[in-house]
Length: 552
Image (cartoon, rainbow, N blue to C red; front, side, top):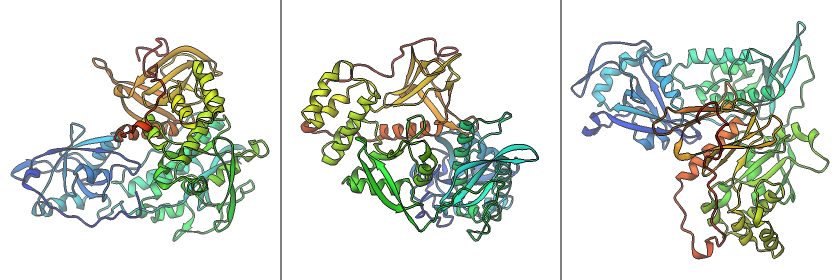
């Protein structure tokens, strides 16, 4: 949630028609659902009248984020919750209702009834007096530059364990073992019982390998970032002690049995080397605590990309597997470069400018801008060279268009080629396959799972699922997996889990595609219409049968 949000207090303006229970569908955004729930801690209670109808005590909406998803859906402060996703919660305890909302995935459907001001005064003493935190609101948000950039292996009593280093504005302030994060989570839940906490990575009974440790690190970083964004929680004694802060300022630097990694000087500028798709490098001078959007803005300024087009581009990181992952807004590129620099060839960089768009019609619309066209053309050429897209019989035509420097025609033909605007993730394990690995692919048509061997050798089997039959999805932090379900008519929903260190990026790509599918279809003029052939195959068609344990 942004710093501009405010909670102006509890107001009850109820129209007569709102006294009738109504359904409200709230779609989660990156800021959550945008409302607080408050109510009785224990279940049961005396029936009371609302609008002449008797109801058991109900949890109620105590705050709604201005211009947030709940406000846009029509949810109001004071609304009583009768049902959550068709499950009655009259008389339910607070934790049960919060848990149902938390488990809703990307959207929640509430049956609510509004109350008058007199009814609110009569009802709230009972519900609010038993609340664990009466008066606490979580919509006063702040951007806290907290991150977990690296880990260390320490030895205690002959046993090796991992600690996670916590940075505030790129200054190392604390380091903790996983069990200390778990204890913090439990203590915070006791103190802030009506806050919907993000998932903490789950416990694991066996030793973690390096990939799993990094996945847990990213999960813990996501947890601590989201929790600290609630001002009241960040300023609590529990969180200040955990971060070794006093009034938001570091108390003493953390110590360990190993040398402490070099910390960053927040006021100094450093050089960021960023590469375009054609591998043209630009050097940017920015504060070392700059986050991904800051570096992206500076790079796009140099490339003369106007602000109207910036949502179509992102700052990407080239990983050790030569996979390109988009950085999220709370990541610090300088720290990531420092971690990767020993693995890079001399003169190379791991920070890349890439397009961040899946919709071909919307991409075609923005090709009218010369600077945008240049970047998208360069990426199309690079994708052909890197074999991310497969021109096959169109290869000769693409070569000719490149030689003739016909940038737009090249892009329009590339748009029809298999693999265009598709993210193919490194091979990994999937519970829908008995043996071997899969390569997961995402595009505007749906999700595809292509069979391969344990070492990534491609096999013939492939299953694809169109967005029309894909239901809920989420990044499962506990299992470090991307999960989604398939809903087919006449069959029970089937959940599929893809175990990958990129599970959070899989969710990010899915969120983006879902967002683009809601965009209004652009009106493309005759100049902007593609003269290239239509797409010849549907990536969301089933072409295999033995990738799943049973019918996928």
